[in-house]
Image (tube, rainbow, N blue to C red; front, side):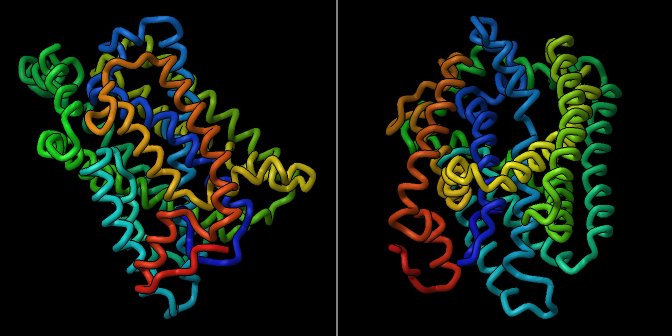
Length: 401
């Protein structure tokens, strides 16, 4: 859930959203720092074999891949109910569609100008659909959400099956292009991203279009399914501390144990087959499904922490980070684009070790946790939250406290 327009907020939602935004960066930094083929197949990158490169990649894969974006999607679904309510008709229904329209424009600008790996565009489109399910019972939301998530899993398996049925020469040529392109192709992609801001857009627009189509069409059912599960969890009181501390702790620990086991298996198997695309169906399916209990485990333990009054000072920076989720998400992309893409950036794409990527993530985390509460001590909203809210209501909103 991106920061909504309500004045009364649930600290637990903000804290969890802040944790999710920070966690997403651990994967996004790799996608920004590397050409697409190197992100999909780390073994193409010589830095992967240097120092702790393999270990850092494995930690990101096992503990971050799919986990925090799943939490973010679930919170987005919960936020729709919080914004629109369950009444029929809802007085804020039109406001919701205006919010999604402007979120779509933010997303498209983000995708084509800053970084292709935008999630705002598919979220805005999913938000137009999932709002229609806001009045369903939790059980119905869980069932339909699970079915939608299963559809994408079946499509993934079908994709690998179809590749196995292709003529060998045709299949090998396609695999080489996608997962093991020749050095000159990688060098060409790097040059495209090292170009000046507006001159590189024609060369990089293809990646943006492809990613948006994959996220909106192929991964769309998962996005909507997870949002529905987020709605169901919100209705059960999960996100608003309606469960007992012990229930959060026990369910969170159990779910996390299952998720970590599945994530460890998936990561170890990807390493074992050296990212051979024809042998990734099992590991990637395991990672896909393990991310659900893994993300739920993380979320439940964060909710348990939010139940402890004595550590409210520790939660405050994370709550501020979550309250400015849109601003912080876009800020991470802007920083990444500056570091790895061409003018006005430094153009270091393809030339960054995994150790340096990890250090960059830690520095950005620290900066966000410091600047978010400072900003909100003076202003009501983050800069992009203010712009989004003002555009939604066609009226500049009061910014200063």
